[in-house]
Image: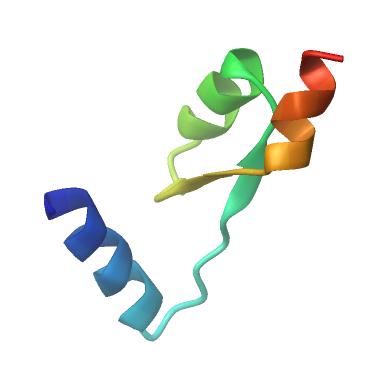
Length: 52
């Protein structure tokens, strides 16, 4: 519930929320390490493509 409320606040905030799709654990760690990152997204097709 806490994560859902945080995401709701991010969407309601006046600044633009950039949500980056990550493909795998490596890209997730790289994007999460950026100081301005507030949320990550996963794209079903992107993840499926990594598994062939």
